[in-house]
Image (cartoon, rainbow, N blue to C red; front, side, top):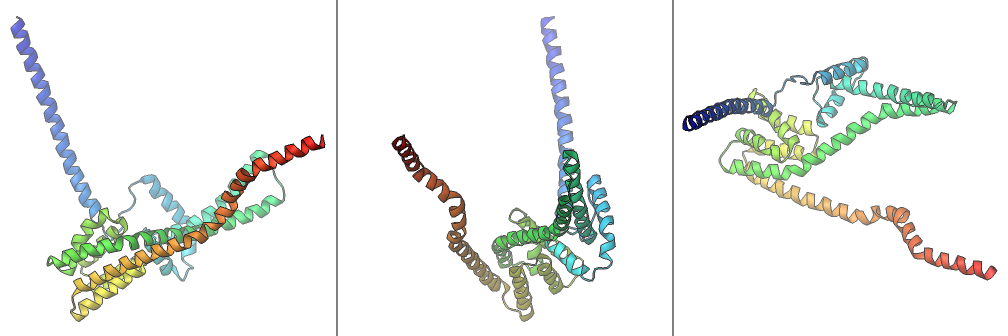
Length: 310
């Protein structure tokens, strides 16, 4: 009986173990397939906007765009604003309407919050009206400032990662790939270096696949980024392609120039550092040093004068 019991227990344990292993292997393989399809969908950058996955975010953006929709019809520089939004990384089809909707919402929301705070604290006077006007103006003009700030940050990231991307371009072209095949290959490898350049190169690759002229696709790349070095690179590639010159040598020269330029910018920032640090020294560090150095002497002089007078 004891031996039969151990045989039954061992068989039951093995059955449960193998069944659990099979179920886990099945779900693991399905998860691997789903992740693979998800990676294919995320790696391919479509030219047509697919919409937001988050329903709340989609409804919020639609509501914001409905607030600013009336302001986009009367704007003559709508294309210029859309280009600025693209350079900042915002490619929503209702981007201009969302932009004006955010300006209107902040201009209305900040004074309302200020008045609600004063009503709850029981502080209401004539000066609140002036503060409300100032908050409304600040809310209306803070969105363009944030847009310029985000654009500069994105362009700086692209500018810093450009020499490394040029090295990848040079390696691929020296391996015998054509310009279009090089862009296709580099766009897959550049994601770990710069997400911004990865998206831009994916869009350029998608434009080339749809049949857009190579020169036009490269010009669109320079316009979408707004970075002067990228525009110079695009012009260099187009000119070399027209004249039949060696694009690899031109790219290598441009990459070395960008590295020298980056080093010069770092040296310029280092040279400006003593001037920039002067005001924090005068306002925050020197007073503390004076208190530490002169404090004991002042205390001793105060004590001696007190005892002498007594």
